[in-house]
Length: 259
Image (cartoon, rainbow, N blue to C red; front, side, top):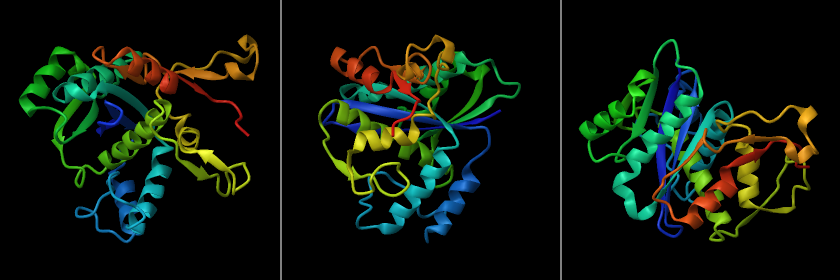
């Protein structure tokens, strides 16, 4: 048995919606609650929101960094959906979940999957879709959940925002650089592209097919896991350009040395 949490990040500029699943074998609510408390915030009232300006709210920046450390102990999957079909994103989310579940053998106990609010038109529609897709054979699904109560949803918010920035950069819509910082393996003052910095932190966490055996490598660049068709689901309604860029960004993950 495990726990899935889903939230989305909406980007009119890139004309896409990116949703993220975060999976943990254990319920992460206690870990997130402790992170909230230790950041000087109040669980149940305060929460991490990716849209918050962390420069004006340093406690949110502290919470974000603590949530990252929890994310690094989870598995993640992403869905990409067109911006102009907002009311259908729930269908894509369920299909993405089914793709992940199909890759692994059915659990002895059903998983629990929590969806943030406003992903679906209503709970009844969501339950019908989940049943039609056969997801109920793998997981109990809980729709329209409050992220202040189901705190694992805050991790999904963070991952959806992180992966959205990566995709926006691939689309040429974000050009921000950040300092490499301490413990990065680079000169701390080196300017690096934000997409690279974000990718480096989560590249090991995607649901994916394992890399080939080292005996099959032509060189170190073959040390890649294949995320396509496992931890990446792209809606059929996406434009060809968006599909290609999503595959470029998330289709494979290089796992070798980057220093």
